[in-house]
Length: 480
View 1 (cartoon, rainbow, N blue to C red):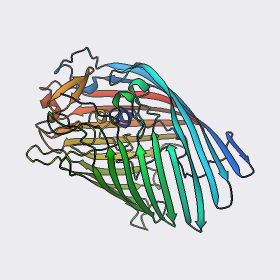
View 2 (view 1 turned 45 degrees about the vertical axis):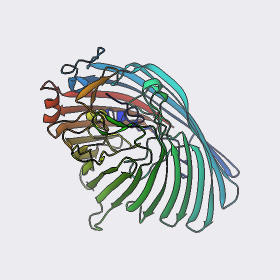
View 3 (view 1 turned 180 degrees about the vertical axis):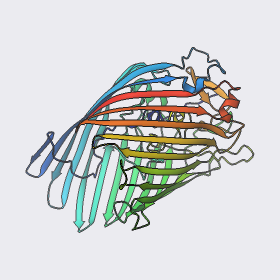
View 4 (view 1 turned 30 degrees about the vertical axis):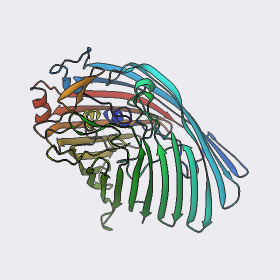
């Protein structure tokens, strides 16, 4: 038996195989004033910024899903070698009005038109939609030097920390199209109150994700968030998240479904980043730690990372090196407690929280650990490149990997679903390369490729028939 993963496989995770599109989203509520430009109109006490994001991308895969269809023939034909094209257009507008020197009002509107030509990695395509992306309003009040208040509501972007749990509020792919470009990021409804006292920011929030109708988990979240910034590079934060409601069918063990298992879950999430050595300013340390519990279903789960990086700005090409160890607990089949980590609405690009390149389409940051190595280089003022490598392992053997689903490998709409776990921890070794050329200030060309080599765990589950999974893409992005 399988269960779809609402709001995850169909949104942020899919972006990982083809990387970041370099699109700049409509400024979130409370963001700084938009920069001057050809689409900026100003008057006495008001500013109107018009924006346009658009992208078109062609992608292809060879032996997708490690060609598991050879080992486990699906009920309907599935071609592991495929190519498709997708695109979107996102016009936007942002209005800021200064009522007084201390009081300002703002609001934003944006829409997305997207489409996929051909069948994507999940065998969905030849479809698209036009939807509202942003429709929000708010006010800002300056109560004194370095003291401010901000209240906003509506359809807007919102994230906590680095996006390990809260960032991708929109649903992409399937009936919306544009699976890999993932242009929809805003939440369907938000209510956010923000208070700033110097470097300290306090937030209270309510979030309702804008999920696909075909995979709506009916999740609603609320919580508190505090963050302190010592400088532009040094900060620490703490958030509490509570799931008010959800119909997400969590699993405590293979084939045992707990209806609404996410409902009532609590999360405590701490994060931070620091540049500890004044004599070595390019060095940074960062970390995230999240603890989840739900007394209703006896859930206790952990997730997070420890990261170290160094920006060698004095070297040619100014390389930035980084290493991160990431851990997301899985359910131990020998206990009555549900230790499955719920990654909620995380940001799944290769520079974010992807676990692997191609493999991140299959691994949902639950019951996985990964060593991630990265390097970013500046080849010229217009040319940039990055590389990533992940060594991915299961935390618990013989335990669900794909977000708590059970049995070995099954198929949903012809797509392989890894659901019971593996008998050997090594899942995959993933490589990702990306190159970006800045053609103009508003036009970007990006190309990349990914390779996922199955480990002993996947090869064993597939009776030795798993193959290397290749992927590549080229996209052109316009951003005003």
